[in-house]
Length: 80
Image (cartoon, rainbow, N blue to C red):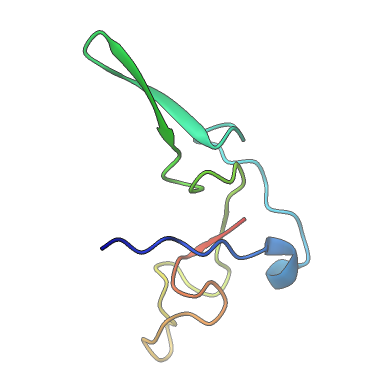
């Protein structure tokens, strides 16, 4: 079973809007070619929100001081 990322509001954490995702250019989806076929999928960077801001408290979803789940991003290291 896969965990669905909980998108944390960047305004709540940092007081600012998250910038547009550079991977999908704010669209929330990316298009890729697989042979002669074109596929569209949810952006892996922003998880379909179109906005991306790395967590200011951690880099991988764990609290650096304790090793527990980061309380700021709830373990997802992404704010939107």
